[in-house]
Length: 147
Ligand code: SF4
Image 1 (cartoon, rainbow, N blue to C red):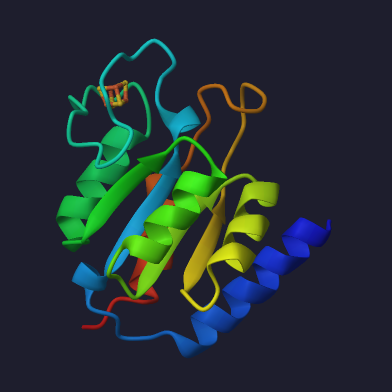
Image 2 (cartoon, rainbow, N blue to C red; image 1 turned 180 degrees about the vertical axis):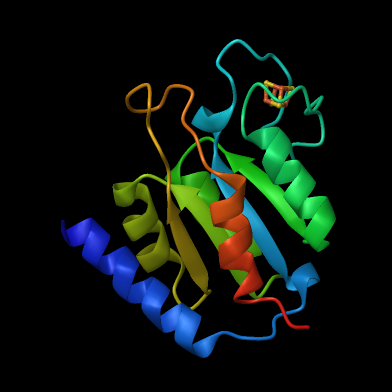
């Protein structure tokens, strides 16, 4: 509950104050568990090895990165790697996809860097073949990208 509260307050403030961002200053950050568990492609990091087979949402996120001309799609194995990415990347906004706890701790851990959290879906339980809907990420992006 507290984790949700942190994420929701953060998202409210980010939506209110962050506008007209160049897409090339935005990155999507996703967790390793959205990769289909039988896929052996090395997607941790830039996800460029994804073969776009469609068995997991990484294909959709790669397409979104291309369609919106985003700076990066970065897949991480855990919270420390996520925080390091946000601190090192020269970007203005991160769209972070993770479970409630990881989002809340990550958002707090990277302040003053700006991040917007999207809750991961867990149809198979925690950390296995998790899911995110492309349209949900796209809708969030559209609120930030400058036209
Ligand atoms: S879309 Fe296919 S190739 Fe890409 S990470 Fe998912 S399962 Fe692997």
